[in-house]
Length: 272
Length: 349
Image 1 (spheres, rainbow over the protein chains, first blue to last red):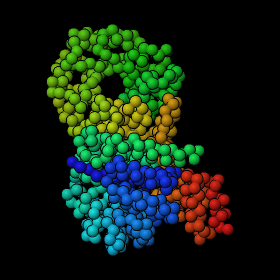
Image 2 (cartoon, rainbow over the protein chains, first blue to last red):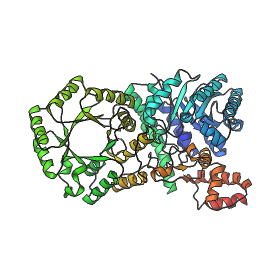
Image 3 (cartoon, chains in turn blue, yellow):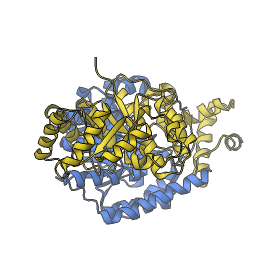
Image 4 (cartoon, chains in turn red, green):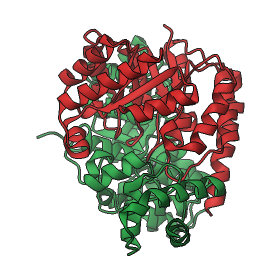
């Protein structure tokens, strides 16, 4: 079985509180990720401003083999910033749990679907390849997650991210949910798992056992709060335990981990 | 009523094995752990017999791990130990030695656990041997482990559920975190109905982390457990006492697990903390912090200015945000509370 690793070290990884990668570090990490054989690199958020856009253009200039993706909210301004940078692969994220829709957006499920449709269509009008992201999916109504996937598929989205935004899944629930969703979902599912209870790797393995073919990871498991599923651990667990092929070249991992660790370490030293 | 979980602590054994600690420190660590949850402490005989004044530590909740040797069992008994974990291989060991050792233990009315059955490599022959041993010896319990952390959660759960049915013992699970799967596997054991789980604070020595197993049992498997008010602080103090580094993002314990910087997250936690936190920081004795830097949004700037009692016209917020982003990128770290007023002045001027 072949699994695609979608690396988000440069987006969710860098969102680890207090962490800042320089443009040069971002480019070096992207190149090392590409050489290590990740399927996709979520490179950052163009809507953050000029400095981030500069760093992202540098990455795009390297014409990497991996899909290089820009993360966006469902807003035309965000997407325009990504297109202006030169991105072809566009990830558009919407919250899907009622908790997020009611308390964060203060909107309705229908509003979310409308915004997603509009922004996906907008990105598609530039010829972009688009992916949908379902934020807080693990606390959402499954029926609504499936509607989001159907809506996105109808506009040409190629996959949907199922985000365990606060890391509240455990392996048995992950397996059960993924088994149920994979046959009913209009799009291939990518699992995005946080490590708040120390379960991100175990959950990634359980998702793959349920038949999920795309796993979101970060180098060293860096990311918001307790971080994300770690690329190194997920790769090792999948290949050692299940003989799953991830496309990752093991020999390249030490160099990649070293680049990321040095970039993180420099940040910590500055903060002291 | 569901039987309560009993944690089998491995922290103290690690401290004895890897760190040079005096008896006072060991007593303090042991008391802190014992206050967290129902627990017994595994310590190997080879370590235990070399600790001066070991009886001061209180041996009633210590289980001594030793090979199947009558001499060692006697020595442990003479030290004051009454709980024993006896290592042996039923397929490869001379049973007459074992017989003598067990008779010694049985005669003295001691609490004996067999160790161990490796979940990744057991055979039907081993299972049959253990089944047979139950008829001859008064041993009620068997340790099942995962040497080298080779298994995953679903296999662990399914296999342990089966072993629970076929083995005439109370099972105890000892996981291994070599591949980062120990907490998930420990949950598998708990889900299969096993109530005795080996853990160590912070996962030292490669065991499932005590705090992760405790929190995920409570909040994800909904087991009836009380979480100590200062779980994170107590665990960190124990780890610091042992000279162990605690990464800032370590689940449950890390200093940054409730630090928020990104615009969307800060905006979310201000509106309702559950949006971006799996449990409230106070649950484990930690506090939430807002960090401002490259990833900040307007809500974070507003919140930080409120915290610092700085009142500025909201029309300046985007300008302050731009200054904050540029400055933090330049210095490659977030903007401190001391640096912010100057950036606000620059933005307003």
